Amino acid sequence: MTEKKALEQRPLWVFGYASLLWNPGFPVAEARPATMAGFHRSFCMHSIHHRGTEEAPGLVLALDADDNAQCRGLALRAKEGTEAETLAYLRERELISSAYLERLLPVRFDTGEEVLALAYIIDPDHVQYAAHLSLEDQAQIIARAHGGRGPNCEYLWNTADHLAEMGVPDADLAWLSDRVRALRAAQA
Image 1: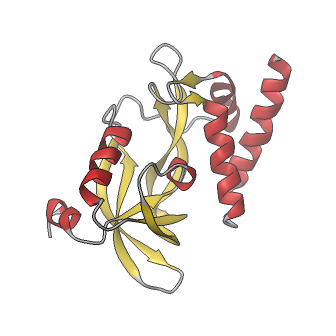
Image 2: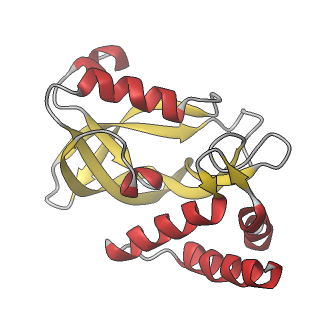
Image 3: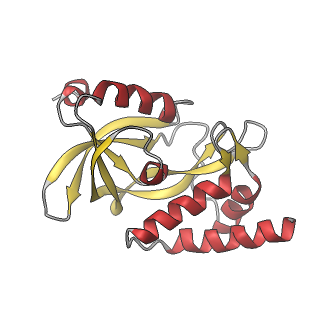
């Protein structure tokens, strides 16, 4: 089945692993904890629009391919009848600089049921790909960056808080949250 055909199927599921957890921006009929195999959540994308600028890029989370990894998040089912507008909205939001690739990938619910979900994964060949930055380098960038949707630190803290509420531990995000708070306090 082609991705175009799959995107025309109903229902439309979208995999949220970062800002879609706390700001989906489209009508959600159902949200279910889900796991995507083969990817990990990583601050591996320079943000030049939403959380930074071209002159002072921020960092945002992306799904980075890793055969041995799994990413825990939410499968969000678009409200029936809003699929086309949801897809248009997500493409405008997520594909703003073509650093993400739009894919339909399997996600597994806790019940064992599997569905195809729309996901935005990082293009490792894109100029905004920023893999292998140390946590300290990430913290330094996130602490000072600001873009069209606000401070980079708010993106980090909202994502970390929502993952914690879901019971999804992420030691790197917890460390980054604390370190960015300390850096920003020192800047004040």
